[in-house]
Structure formats: C-alpha cells, structure tokens
Length: 288
Image (cartoon, rainbow, N blue to C red; front, side, top):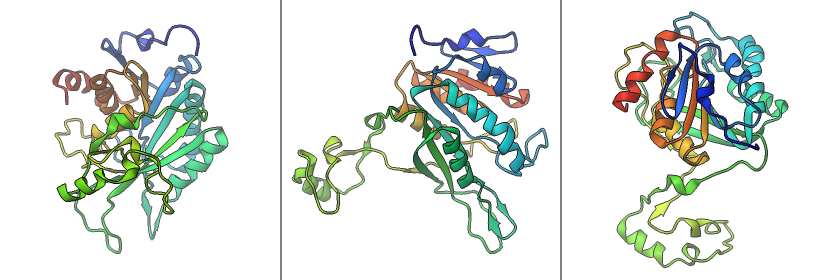
C-alpha cells in the first residue's frame, strides 16, 4: 500500500467510541469494510456467530445459508482490504447436530481458499478447564480452531514476539545447551533441530497448540460466546508489529479492541448489537 497508513478514526460517527488508537462502531461490518481502502488491514481476527447458536440477543440461528451468503460477502471484503503482508484469523468450531459434529468448520476452509485466500495454518485452542456439563455419548468439548489465512505468500510472522520459557527441567536445559542444533543448523533424520537455533535452550517459540482457559470473568452483557483476551493478544503479537492495524468485524464485547489497545496496535471493531458494544469504553478504562 502506498501513501500514509489508513487512520481508523476517519470512520468516526457520533455513535462511535474512539481512542487515540482505534474506533468501535455499532453497525453492520459490511458497511464499515466498504469504507476501508484496499490493502489497509494488517490483521483481521474474529469469531463469527457459531452455527445454530440461538443465544444471541437477536435470536438469529446463523444457519448454513447465513455463512454461504452474508459471511462470504464479509470475507470477500476482508480479502480486498487485507494488506499483502496481512493475515485473517478465523476462530470457529462447528456445533454438534444430533449424532454428528457439524462439518462447517472444515468447509469454511475450502470456501475461503476458493475465494482467493491462502490457508496458512490451523491452530488448536485447547481449554484446560472447559465448562462442565453432561453430553450423553460425547465427551466435553475442550478445543476450538483458529484458522490463519493470508492474501499473498508475503504474509508476516513474528514468533520471537511470543517466546515462552521452556518447560524442561534444569537437567534437561543443561543438556540442551550442549546440543549443536541450539547454535548451528543441523540436519537430523527426524527433522528436529533445523530451526531450533532461533530459540535456544531456555526460551522457545510458540506452537500451533494454544492453551488458554475459557473466559470465566464477569459477563454483565450476557454475551454467550466470549473468548479470553489471551487469544487475540497472541495473534496480534505473532502477526503484527506496533502501530499496525487490526480489525474485528464481529467484535462482541470488544476483546480484540482491548488486546490491540494494550499492544499498541491501531484497531477497528464493529458490532451490530449496541448492548454488547457499549461495555467496551469501561473495559478500555479498566484495562480488562
């Protein structure tokens, strides 16, 4: 993209909430996307309404036809507005329907590839303490998917922004310090070691398994499907640099906006339901 970066506050209306970094808009995300220039967004991360989820305040069931029509119109605009180095992260998990798990989560991957996206990676969000319940012949649902798509093969990645302490014991850390793959590239038959030189023995790069507890905090709006702030925070650090622009078209209570604000990224979020969106100013002020 040439010229100055797009300023999200250009979208401001009387009904919008703004900070120095971003803007929250109550309204249809398609209207907002259509006002954003091509190649402007560095990261789009969102969790759209899950299929046949009737617990939202609008009572909409969000059946398959909604995804084939409205959702694909949204992703078409995301593809247009995404920068050549940007990524689109989709958090989604199909519901169970009778005796089967729904397959829409996998079909969405193929639909978006047909639309022109590159399918870069599939992350698994594991929930160590999933909500309790009885599920007849099924076990507790403790995972969701975060599918990463991109516009071009030039998509950016910053794994060193997400280093964590190695989980090995002290003896194993000392042993690993002596391994050559921590200092030079080696070609082990297993493939191990060829990239470990970038992390070293004490800090490691992230994997595709993300272990975050579900959101158990206060829920004054009654939103039925919140994700923890650790989830958008991880992808914001992994896929963007400070000052870049993050967008969430289905923002709910604004967790992506809060994560971007705390990470020093510019942001735009949209939410149709004013009841959910109105909690964001207080969350920004309190930092949670």
